[in-house]
Amino acid sequence: MPKKPKKTFQTLKGTYDVLPQDQKYWEKIKAVLKNLSLHYGFSRIDTPVIEYADLYTSSVGEATDVVQKQMYIFKTKGKDTVALRPEGTAGIARAYIEHGMINLPQPVKLYYIGPMFRYEQPQAGRFRQFYQAGFEVIGDKDASYDAQVINLFIKICYGIGLKNLSVKINSIGCKQCRSGYRSQLLRYYRSRIKGLCSDCKKRVKINPLRLLDCKEEKCQPAKINAPNIIDSLCKECHDHFKLVLEFLDELEIPYCLDQFLVRGFDYYTKTVFEVFLEDEHIEGGSEKTHKRSSLAIGGGGRYDYLIKMLGGKDVSAVGAALGIERVLDAMKQQNARVSDLQKSQVFLVQVGELGKKKSMKLFDELSSAGIYAMEAFGRNSISSQLKIADRMGAKISLITGQKEAIDGDVILRDMETGAQEIIPVEKIVKVVKERLKK
Image 1 (cartoon, rainbow, N blue to C red):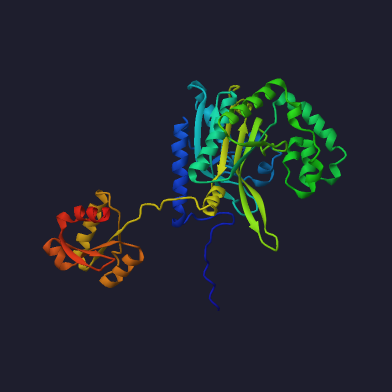
Image 2 (cartoon, rainbow, N blue to C red):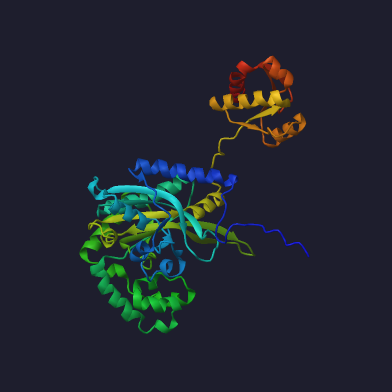
């Protein structure tokens, strides 16, 4: 019988490994996020990646694409219906209520970074397991916090090294003014329903505001002359939005109004915004032309009803999230300056059992002194170890053979010149530090 082919394993569709060469980008993103978030008064929070599914259907909205098409939902052995986290805000709102954070000084300012899960067709910058970083301000309705969240978002992007950012912003009002606008929108679309995509035909009945958010090509002509929600805002929402824009002007953050921007989750109210990377490239031919393309790297908005909707007190909130994968890709495309992670310039070479024992002890001593070293303790040949040291970019090799181990010495080899010298083992840490400074 023919042998059964050996099974090989790969990552699941829509997931990926973060390889060592990409870790420096992740470390920079996390460092900038932590540093700026703390400066702006935000504290770190981590919520579970698994929650009761009702948390998301109640907050994100049953009619949204995330709930209807993209959520990973399953039953546990205890018959609970649970879901993998598709976004960060709902879990943080739940934590705010569960842990009595309303008793803390308000507003409570929280930031997070972690994996999210959505079952959708993978494409550039979009995965089934993806990472988001975000920040939430819960417990205050003042317009200054809308502007602060946008400002922090922009500052983090600039701190990471991104350029050519633009902000699109809109207000979708409150329950009061949105009710009147909803009626206007339905009247406008009444004669245009036949030309809409299948999803939009459902949205007409469930959530007409999402008609403005559709990206399907066949739905674009229908919404061009749709009524502008800004014209339907009540006085409170109008004044709030006006203040947000004035704060952005004061902070010198450029923005443009986008009447079709509504965001994809039902919990949003009043201010909504998205941040884009504007990428200019040149197209060839007899007449070269400059073209600009936009890539959304994140966004957010106000969600004044969410806490109460989930069983908490009636408190206002605003937040935002950025997609790590898209940010990371943009860092590479824009050649953002990223320092390599701590890279060792010292390699330990050993020969014989006694030489290996002494070399292992020296490895620990170097580590305690803050010197990162590389090794190949599984190899016995000096030449093979030196080849590895050269390939790994070591500046110095420290060689310990049987004789050196007995005499209490170490051979220091300059990998560039090949020059060698014998150093007493008790002095080697000090000598290595001095050489690395040079």
